[in-house]
Amino acid sequence: MKDKLMRKISNKEIEVGVVGLGYVGLPLAVEKAKAGFKTIGFDIQKEKVELVNEGHNYIGDVVDKDLKDLVEKGRLQATADFSFVKEVDFIAICVPTPLDKHQQPDISYVRSSAEEIAKYLTKETIVVLESTTYPGTTEELVKPILERGSGLKCGEDFYLGFSPERVDPGNLLYKTKNTPKVVGGVGKDATEVIAAMYRSVLEGDVAEVSSPAIAEMEKILENTYRNINIGLINELAILCDRMGISIWEVIDAAKTKPYGFQAFYPGPGLGGHCIPLDPYYLSWKAREYGFHTSMIESSMMINDRMPEYCVDRAARILNRFEKSLKGSKILVVGVAYKQNIDDYRESPALEVIEILKQAGAKVEYYDPWISQYRYHGQIVKGMTEITPSQVETYDLLMITAAHSNVDYEMLQKYGKAIFDTKNVMKAIKNRDNIEVL
Image (cartoon, rainbow, N blue to C red; front, side, top):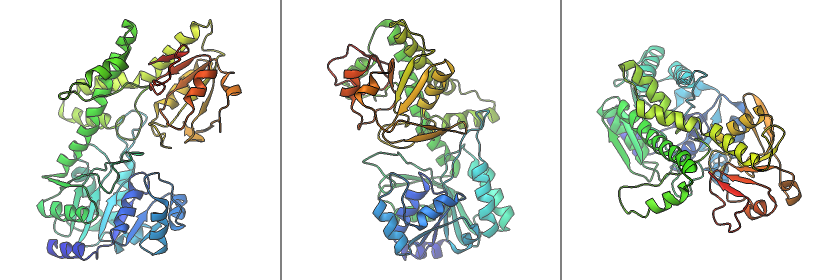
C-alpha cells in the first residue's frame, strides 16, 4: 500500500478530499488543487458549497482568482454529499473544535465527520485530522470510528494521522503554502506517506514525529505558549496601571535585549479559534491523568477577565467626566479578534460590548472589516462609517482592534475621551484625551 500511494502522490494521481471549508479547509483545498490534485471540498453548510462551486471566495487568505480558475478548470469542486468520499484517496478533516457551555472540548464536529467518512471509506485511503484538539483524539476517537464504520483496519487497509493546522488569518508573510507542517501518523509508513503528500503541495518544511499524540500535543504547546505569555503581560499591565507605569514603554525597553526575550502585548483579551481555546483542551485532558495544569489555568483566568477589566477602566475614565457607565454613549472601534481581518471568532471585543450593555451603556460599534456579527444567537449590526460629527456625540471611544484603515487622527481630534486597549494610537502626538491600557 505504501509504495502504491507514494507512486500516486509522485504522479499527482491522488484525488483529495477536504472536510470543512472554513479558514483552514478552503485554503488547504485550494493549495491541493493548485498543486495538480483533483480536489473535492465537503461541507454541511450548503451556502459554502454553492459559493465554492460558483467560484466565489469568502476567505481572506485565498486569492479570488485562484479559486475561480480552479473551479472553472474542474480542479476543485464542493459538495455536501459525503458519498463522494469513496472517490478520494486522501481526506483532510478541517472542522471546528470549539468549547461547550461548560468550557469543555466539543468534538462533535470531528466525531460526525469521522462517522460520515467511515460510511464510504475505501481501502488504500489516507485520512488526516487537522483540527486542533486534545492529545489522543486521532487514535482514541477517530481511529475506532473509522474502523468500526468501514470494517477496515488502520495501518493495513488505510492510513491515519494528525497534522495540525497552522493558519494565521491576515498574516502577509506566512500562508498555508509556505508554513511548515508537522505530521504524526499511526505507524511509520503512515507518517511517511502523509508527509510525502504534504511535501508535494507545500513549500514549507514537513517535520515527521513518532505519533499523532506528539503532533497533537505540539499544537497545544504552540498556542498555550502564547496564552501563558500574553497572560503574563496582561497581569503586568494591570499592575503597571496601579503603579503609574506604562507597560508599553516597559515592553519596548525589554525587547532591546537581543536574546532571551520575545515581546508579547496586552489587550482586551484573547480571540481567534486556537489561543483562547487550546489550553482548555489540555487542562481537560490532564484531569484524566490526575494532573492540575496550574500555570496554564492561571493564565487562562487572567486573559478571560481582561474584557471585564477593560470595562472597569472605561468606567474610571467616564468617572473623571462625572459620568457613569449607565446611560453613557460609547463607540467600540474594532470587533475583529486581530487587526486587518474580518474574523471575529472568540473576539474579546464582543464580550466587552456585552458587559457595557449589561451595565446600561448605550453601545455602538464600528469595524471597517465587519458590518455585522452574531453573538449568542443575535445579529448585531455596526456603523458603516464614522464622521467627525458622529464621533463628537460619544462620551467614550474604546479601541479594541488595531485596524490600519481607521482614521485615528480624526478620532483623536473629535473624541471626548478615548480608551486605546491596543496602543494603536501611539504615534499621535496630542494625547490629552487618550488613555492606553
